[in-house]
Length: 115
Length: 115
Image (cartoon, rainbow over all chains, first blue to last red; front, top):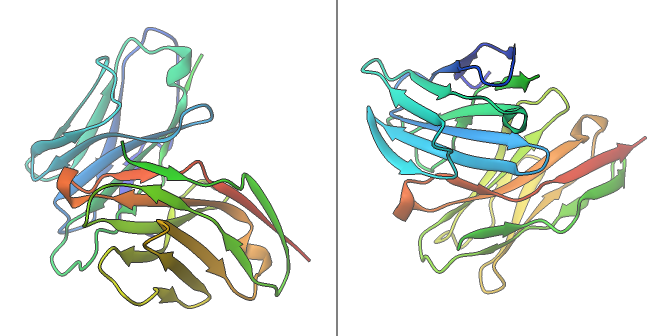
């Protein structure tokens, strides 16, 4: 158990809909990263938050947005969903006190299926 | 652009034998980290081993060792005494402090351990 939780585990929805994925980082970790894993694109970095502020952006579509709340949990919002958004979405956290490398601790992922 | 290359889509190894999974990377940064993660069929991402760009010794963690050749920009994972439970996808990743330490992932290698 990495200590990172993600809900829901599975999500099935229709094209055009909007969903919210939730992530709670490990206790003490300030950074949250979101990744998308799909068959055609592989594992791609989407966005990073550090202590509530956006820190870095990767290949995140304009239809997607995220935020990190004061309690450090994070949400990834996906809107106007398309079939190609079907993927496994990971949240990872790092940056806790005493961490000596930049290892990221991954949550179990949310599997999104868009029908 | 930062890039991680894993040229072996699939590998087979006999139980109890050693296997090397290849990874090359491309960056002009002086400071970076290299990681290997294991992803079993259940989907979770499990951290295996880390190597910092300034580390002179190759990293080892139990049966895992990282063969770091900085001049060649390679970071191969060696698994000794393979076990059936080692069958999984293996991802090499690089992080760069200059851009927030998000991971750049390779395309992965599927390892099958044969009894």
